[in-house]
Length: 131
Image 1 (tube, rainbow, N blue to C red):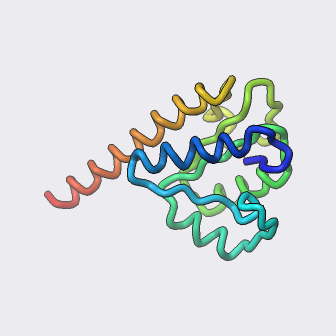
Image 2 (cartoon, one colour):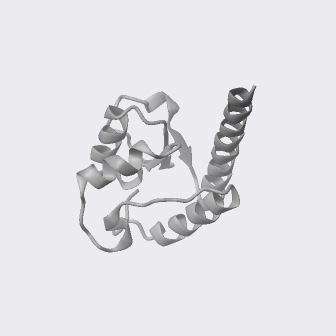
């Protein structure tokens, strides 16, 4: 997600962390999202491989977000694409699955549904494997 260019980045991060915690998950953010402003592709790929899904916010048309989305797609990881309403989208893969949100409340609702579905699917998978 955009960080330095997005005035709501801190609020979005807190929202994501709180929702992940509610479902017993942990949210990971790119190093530059932690104000370290570095990028390690190897570490990024390792974190993606272990993720149950990846949230990509394409708001503000940041090239780095599109780059990271490309890595996510190349690794075949499940991805949730979101963007603030009015954001032009410049990529074609996954465009039909992108959800626009109008504010943090709408983003919260969207993520809450996605996390609930992810946890439910994971629990069902465990039940099937036990059978």
